[in-house]
Length: 368
Image 1 (cartoon, one colour):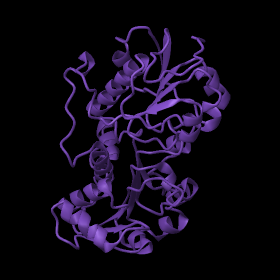
Image 2 (cartoon, rainbow, N blue to C red):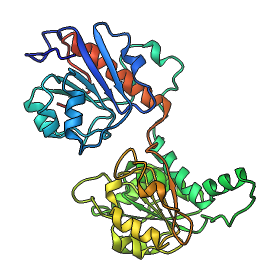
Image 3 (cartoon, rainbow, N blue to C red):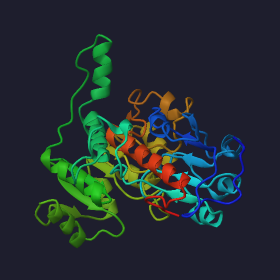
């Protein structure tokens, strides 16, 4: 396990054997079968995630591995960690980018970084038998997760399900969505898909981001087969003040970090709900907790969290949300992309890249 590799493999020289791989953050134990058939590869899978603050523990866990398989933005790889992994030569992620990787440091250390597209490997693999094909263009798991959270909040599904199992019956009113306002923060590919579904429920759609214009919103509407003006661009303050449902779909960056703070949350109607399936850090956590503890908004649906996995002692797990005047919380464990087909195709693509790298061939979907 402590084998040293003095020279990283390139396109002309195969990797030395044996080679070891660490599979990180594979909560559902999906990955090992995709790597198991590769000769001369020692596999260790870690289902538990170490927090970024546990740098010494991460170094101790990973220092001996030549290859590390990761799931996008679960375990970060900052420069301090990469510089402490002398054996690491191939770092695999899912998707075609990973904002939690220090790519310049990886490049300086001759660590190859490669991603996945979700289309699957270039050759058949037995582990992909009976796996559903990719969804047709224009559909994705995150949009489905967003609407699952919106409908769970509007129709009290978690609360009523619990009540039914405990012997109770109806517990309160549902919230009709027809005629209500859906506020979409970030009208990109995902935001536009969420917005279009809102129309099917009879909602009016308003949208905002720092760079969004009515012209670009009209272009998104036309691309979705809708009339110009269907998605109405408004100011940030108006969106949070008037929307009955606010759904976040921004890419996390320095400009968007904390874009939803105390001012935006306190501007919302007490009957409104906030849903975030994008990135937790778009929202000021302390401000959200404060508003929810006061019952300042009706409910919150979260699929992304400030620390993942959410700790056992976290207030998100322990507080009595939806009781004693607090806002309702519907939370899911970052499931917006955890669909069987895409997860398995990602790991099949990673396994193909391991094979290619071990033979000294160029990897697919190389990032660095």
